[in-house]
Each structure stands twice: as structure tokens, then as C-alpha cells.
Image (cartoon, rainbow, N blue to C red; front, side):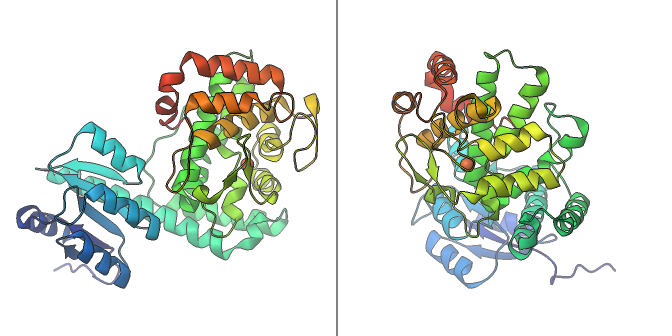
Length: 373
Ligand SMILES: [Fe+2]
């Protein structure tokens, strides 16, 4: 008889106050997971604070709290734990809200058993990839150097990462050799902070919107989409980085460790990404008036793609919705960044951005919420 070792099984915490669905979940998931359960938010938090949990199935209505409320606390205090929402009161709206707050997926009661098993397995596959990257990022500071050693370490990270189960399909924007790196780089952003990944996706979306008005070549558009997506990849080198704790200047520029530009560019170089992509990462904090960093370039000495990303990231930092962070409306953000025309930002490019943004202002944040990269 085949036995399944419980030592290596991940642990799932089932949070549900109704015995029927709770027992059904236990029966379905027991072959794959070590099971813990809780009937309310308080006992769920007790379990989470006392033992390692990999995955949670979370009922949306609990006797002592709303499930989405509890989800916010779980993702704040235990960001490495994945959550699947299981609900009998579902709607597209609450599903989107749960996913926005960091849930990995959403299932309606009465649930389909195959769907439930598939979703929990896919979520665990993703968690294994993110956990692997978190361990590597924390334990290998040498990967941020530009050296023979860092290339070797990245090669071994890439090959081990590729041997882990993958889920997302490739995106058609990129060429073959760069394409294979996108899931890895996207997971590195998410392993650091899910909000950093969302920011990166939105900035790529805003930059791509501008590209359509600028007669860029197809290659430039491709480099822009990728460079915008990776512009802050160097922040993944900062220990304990949190997107919500980035201080934002009135212009929309974040005040962070300035080294993130060069660290990110070194990583892009080690990965063999195109020079234009490296330049976006290096120069996206340069200012039109020459007071930016890291090279105090000014005017058209700053590569145009980096100038575009500088505007897109400033707009997103002002409008980004993240826990503990105050954002302003898209209209107010456009007004705010227009005050920095000619100082922070290239006036002509800013005019293009203002024009493009105003045309779809009502739906802009929602449109950008779908990952562009
Ligand atoms: Fe940045």
C-alpha cells in the first residue's frame, strides 16, 4: 500500500463556521494536506500565530468578523501564507476585492471538487516557487554584485526555479529568450511584496499607453513594456522592503534607497536583458532638470524610455491603493504631476501622458489593474 508522508505535506487551515462545508473541505483536502481548522477569526489567528500554515481556505462570512477583513490582517502579518476564498455569498465584486487584497483564488459554495483540488494545488505550486525565491533572495546577497560569482548563482537559481512546477502561460509581448525570464522576474517581485508586483504591472500598462502615441518602434515598445515592468526590480534586494512603506514626495517620486536603480540594472545585466531595458532601470529616477539620481543626467541625455517610465511610476505612486497608504484620485494625481513639468518631468512627454490619461480617466486604475506584463 502506498503511504503519504505527513512530514512533507503542506498544512492547510480551513476557516469556516459551518460544519458541513468545513467537513467536506477536510475530506477532500486530507489526501494532499495536513489539516487544521478554525470556526471563527479569533481561533484562526491563534492557529496562525502558533504553527506554520501554508494555505488557508477562508469562508467569507464568519461569526466574529468579515472574511475579507480577516484576509487583510492575514496578508499583513503572514504575507507568505496563501489564501483561497471559499464562499456561499460570492459575487464578482467580492471576488475581485479578495484577490486585490492578496487572495490567490476564489471558489463558490457548493464548490466543484476538481476545481477545488486544482486551485489548491496550483496555489501550493506558486507558494513553493515564491518560498524558493524568498530563501534565495535572503540568503544570497552576492547576487546583487556584478561579478562572475553572481552570474553563476543566478544560473543556478534559474535552473532550480525552472525545475519547479510552473502555472502561468507566457506573454506574447516578449521574444523567446526574454520570455523565459518573465515568470521568474515576476515571481521575484511578488516574493518581495505583492504590491510591488502590482505597481510594476500598472507602470508597464501606463507606459505602454504612452508608447502608442509616440511612434516608437516595435522593439522600443517591447523594451519599454519590459523595462517598465522591471524598473523597481532592484528593490527586491532591499531587506524587508514594503511597498506601502515607501515615502512618496508630492511629485509622486518615492524616497527609497537610491541604490535600487543600480542594483536592478546589475541584475538585468547579469540576466542578459537588452541594454534599453537596463537603461530604464538605471535612469527612471533621473529628472529633466538634472537633480535626479543616480547620474544627475538632464534633458534629452536621459534615455526617452526612462523618461516615460519616470512619469508612469510617479502617477502610479500617487494613485496606488495599498494598505496603510494614502492615495489620491487620478484627476488630482494628474494635476499634481503637471506641476512638475520641466522640473521632474520632460514637458512634452508629460503633455502626452496627460492627454492619454484624461481620455480614459474614469477607467484608468481599473484598466491598469489587469497585469500588463
Ligand atoms: Fe524606482
